[in-house]
Length: 102
Image (cartoon, rainbow, N blue to C red; front, side, top):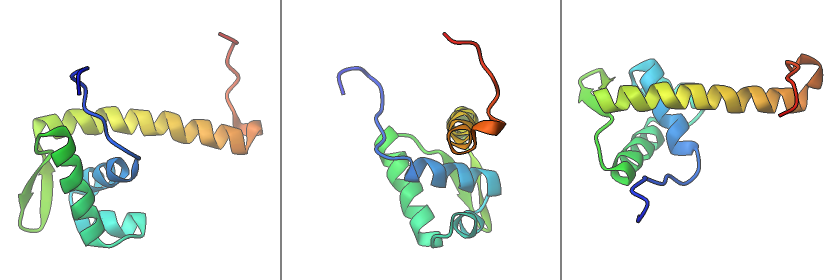
């Protein structure tokens, strides 16, 4: 990619990564998202290949974030929070926070 920025398709791998980071365990992340542990493992491995760095240290019984993984997790958590609030506001305008126009 000429811009020097990694591009990730879809948010499934990203949400799998965030869930695995939150739980520290691929099996718990799978239960949370309603998919198999294998699906989480494959999604995280695909994400790591796409961006070219390991995001987790794998250990018996769980995973821990690498320093790069921790930074990515913080940014994605904030980003998904914004997206989730936007969707909630669209679905239920009564709960939307009033913001001045740009």
